[in-house]
Amino acid sequence: MTGLRHRPSAPTRRPDQWTPDLLAKVDWRRRAAAEPFRGVATSEGVRPGLFPLHETGVDVTGVRRAAEDYLAALSPTRRAAGRFPVDDLTWRHWANGARYFLRHGLCLEDLDDERRHRALDVVRASLGAHGYTQVLDLMHLNLTIGELRGEEDLLNEWLYWFSVYGEPEHGGPWGWQLDGHHVNVNCVFVGDQMVLTPTFLGAEPVTATSGKYAGTSVFRREEAVGQELFTTLTSRQRKLAVIADELPPDLFAGAFRDNLELDIAGVPLGELTSGQRAVAAELIGLYVNRAGAGHARVRMDEVTAHLADTHFAWIGDGGLNGVFYYRVHSPVILIEFEHQAGVMFDNDMPSRKHIHTVVRTPNGNDYGTDLLRRHHERFHRKGSTG
Image (tube, rainbow, N blue to C red; front, side, top):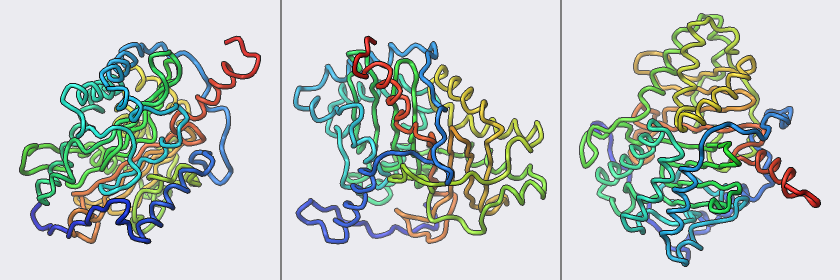
């Protein structure tokens, strides 16, 4: 990490050592997660009717079987600690922080190789090769941070918590969450439909130049294609796309922002040329194609159906080595990307060495909430025979 100096590490604390300031931060997060869920929406409110129950034709038997195998390999005590009702509040306790006090589920570091691999088999069966490799690379880069700071006990590739929600073995709605520093993935299955949001992925550094995983590099396509789209814009299009002069301190739709109010802004994709729209489609695909091929196709069809309402927004420097923020926002998808200042390292200005991304499903379907509501109304209302 040439040119970067290590920040002093924050000490870890047991609950009986928490300071009033730390307790207040934890309490704020608990209160935010406990707010009735609405979902990300514009100032006009939630737009209904966007996420109907339907059959996708995607085979989900493999991922369901992987979840069953993982649960079967756990002791009764660990199984009880590592699974939750499908509508449990802990879905909303995910957070990016390396030192964070609301983790739940089972820590991969505490599992033996067999059970750890079975947990990762669930993730692998849900994601495509691109998405699974990216998640593993980010976990590996967490060890890189630990190596650089001499804190492998606090920052390593297995310090991630895995939780199963619902009862996959009984055929009902279910899902899983992988939660830790720079990797927060929420995945829900309702029938053969899948929702893979919120997904927060980040890295600092984005490239390992030493250590066990030297050569690992992430987010370069998300960075390059986003910048390419901006540079293709005409001056008139840029006036629409640029929404601020200074980068925000962080992503708008990060952890504990499940009910964020965010109006759609930027240049409409419908006003782009066919070539520019092709670049925009490639950019969206980098995020959508984290899912397996079948579910990625279904999701892209959902996004494409709303292209007329999709906007691309930009903040920052479009130059060769510039730092920037962008987002793609429609009624059914919200993607954010941003270069960050140092957290583990003490560069106070944003750099290309630290990147955060997040993907959300606006209008009430993060965590598959709207699909779960519709499933409950169809099959579990009083008098239902389904």
